[in-house]
Amino acid sequence: MAENSRALVWRKSRFCGSQSCVEVAHGLDAVLIRDSKDPEAAPLQFQPDAWRDFIAGLRNETLSD
Image (cartoon, rainbow, N blue to C red; front, side):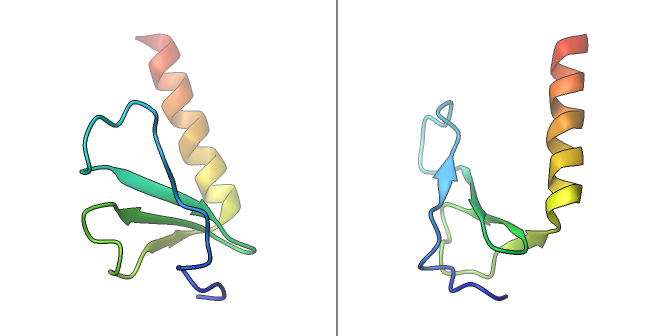
């Protein structure tokens, strides 16, 4: 991972009502995902294009419901 995960700005959904959430950080060359219950674990990494496609798919699914 190019970035130090401690230096990243981690965000979670405003809909998260507990400490058990997924957190997202945007690095220089990847989007990183981690479990808020275990912030010291290695985050999952996704290419920015793959992350945009994933979010677009979520939005399309939400709009079709």
